[in-house]
Image 1 (cartoon, rainbow, N blue to C red):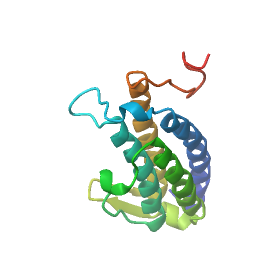
Image 2: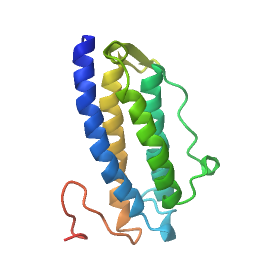
Image 3: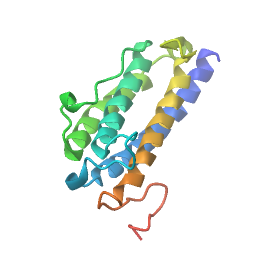
Length: 165
């Protein structure tokens, strides 16, 4: 992909991620504080674990793209300081748009440059922007399936839910 194409694709993907961020925030805000330890299976993350994962990794992935290199992923244990959905929403609103702005400001040349993700994936930075969106939407979807068993209501995601009609 040449730099001009990379910049054009990135502009579309940044706009897409921006739209998805609002939905992600609605899902996180819908998580009830009373059942943060809910998990559907012992192999699954808890509700709070998913809230932390989404919040921290959206920021991390975007910053890694902007930096042109991957660093170790963030620690999403209690040590991260996110102890409830309100903490996550505040951090997400502060950090993720700033990280996305860093990606938005990248040149086409930088977006077309190959980034190595721990030897697992080598691709242009713009490709990782698509992966970041898919990663966020994937985990948000997991979290949305936790909401009713946790005693919460599912917000509208791509239209109304049974709880918003």
